[in-house]
Amino acid sequence: MKRFLAILVMVLGLSIFVNAQEHTKPLPTPPPAQPRPTKPTPRPASEPPEWVRYDSAIGRFSVLMPEIPKDTVETTQSDHGPYTTYLFIARDERNVYLIGWVDYDPKFNFNRQSEMEANRDNFVKGVKATLTGSRSLTIDGYQVLEFTADTNERTFKSRVYMVGRRPYQIVIGYPKEDATVAPVTKFFNSFKVSR
Image (cartoon, rainbow, N blue to C red):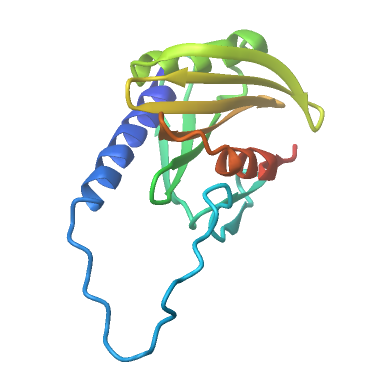
């Protein structure tokens, strides 16, 4: 499981870095011609842009994200047998969205609550954040651990679901000063998983 979290943290860190780098590029010059309105109607900050529904047959989940996520799959040998880590990542102009899960060797037995807490604690440690809130929930009949963690620059909101023997983790990372909760709510509420 530590390998899963290490990969999750690495991907998250790279995504934040790449996203920051993309904003340093000069904006392209718009093509001439078409008349434009003198004052475009801005989208309210609380309203996220149009998103796409992503359905994962192997992951048995669906979710709304700002774009089709990029995926990574890795199988690792361990003392508890092989396990396979799946990660999906998407970004918009300010936020990073992650979904990941692990399929363990069927012979490996673990404590469900301890596994969820280990996901939380290792994630917080991996991104060098401070845990600011944590609570247990039941969502769609599944045991869930929801938590928030802050770094100097970013806030991370996450949920860890236990679905059968499969721990799922969904994460959104956004600039700390951004109080807009619409993308968090939309992302979290759209995540549906089945056994």
